[in-house]
Every structure is written in C-alpha cells, then in structure tokens.
Amino acid sequence: KNTAAYISLLITFLLWGSIYVASSYATGVLSPAVVACGRYIAGTAVLWIMACGKLKTPIDKADIKYFILIAVLGYYLTITFNTIGIKLSGASVSSVINSMMPVGISIAAAAMLKERITAVNIGCIAAAIAGTVIVMGGGSEANVLGVAFMLGGLVAWSIATIYIKKLSQKYPSEMIGAYAMAMSLVIHLPVAAMDIARNGIQLQTGAVLAVLYMGIFTTGVAQYLWGKSLA
Image 1: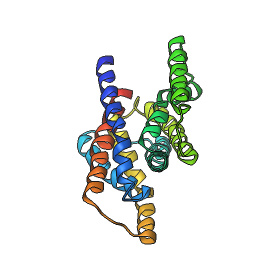
Image 2: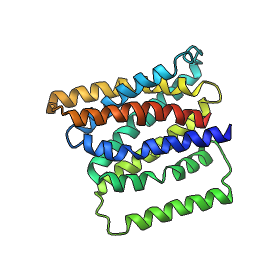
Image 3: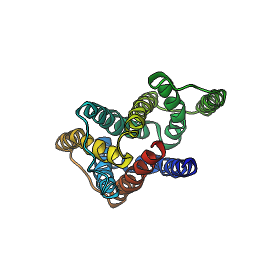
Image 4: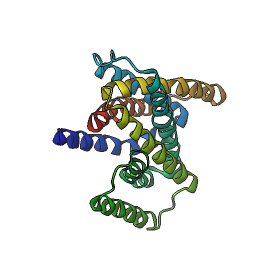
C-alpha cells in the first residue's frame, strides 16, 4: 500500500510540475479567472468519470462543511491564487515557492491533527526552506505580489489537504475530490462569467489546449492520484 501511495505521489508531483509552464502560457492570452474556471470544468468532468461507481456513499450532514471547506480552500482559492501568482512571478519562481508544499502540509498536520513531527521531518522541512531561500535569493526578480499569491495558495492547499486526509478515512478519495471540485464550480463559473462580461475573451488554440491539458491531467488525473495517496 505504501509503495502504491509513493508512486501515486511521484506521478502527481510530476504532473503538477508541468502546471507552471502551461499556466504561464495560458494566462498570456486568457485571464486567470477564465483559466482557473476552464481548468476545473475539464478536471471535474474527468474526475467524475474516474470516480464512477464511488459516488453512492451517503454523506453525513456533519461532514458537508468539510466538503465545502475543501472546495473553497483547495479548489477555488488555491487554484486562483496559484494562477495569478504564476502570471505575476513567472513559472520558475512559482515552482520554487510551491516546492515548499510538503513543509506547509507537515505544519498543518501537526497543528490540526496533532501529528508528531520526527527528526527526519524536521530535516526535510529545513532542507526545503533552505533550498527555497537560496534559489529565491539568487538574483531572482520575483514580483512581490505574485509571491504573496503563491504563498496564499500554499497555505490554502495545506489546510485543504488536512481535511481531505480526514475525510478519506470515511469516504472514497475519488468521491471527495469529485464532489468538492464540483462544488468549487459554484464560485468559478460566476467569477469567470463576470470577468468575461467585463473584459471580453480572446480564444487562441494554444491557450485552449493548455487549459485542457491542465484540466485533464494536472487537475482531474492528478487529484485522483493525490486522493489515493492520502487514503
């Protein structure tokens, strides 16, 4: 089981690693709100197909709030903040900041789940922070606002991951992702619609393909594997 989880994590991080270039390209043509919405429409459709047969488990009323929190924090704020951050700071700087994700998750798990942080965990956290500081301090001209958005996304995703882990003890991981991502569209769709109404939209084949790639692979498939690794 651990081997399968590690393989799922490896593939997930490889897919997420490709987000930065694809998102940077897409936001060069489309607004962050439209990119985020398009990505999650495609990702939700893929995840619902992959979760087919796992959606019949009834949800306890007490757990609905956790699904909503995952939708808002993990699938709306995280993706929106990251998309804006990548647009402002560029793919390379954004990827460096996001490499601190394990640090955020470890801290959130210790604070929210009372998980014990081992010496190995501390060493990995220290190495991640040191590496990020070295790279960021090496003459990078990162946009400060972009970095702030990326850090905001990191915090939001770290907290959402704890709730995903909590619910995965009770519900299939595919079901958690499918329902939470669908809930996030309640925010994504009107925000994107208002953006288009205000600023218009210019569609280009390359940008559309980049959004579809992010939606299908870095969102739908990646979220399926991420949920599996946490179960």
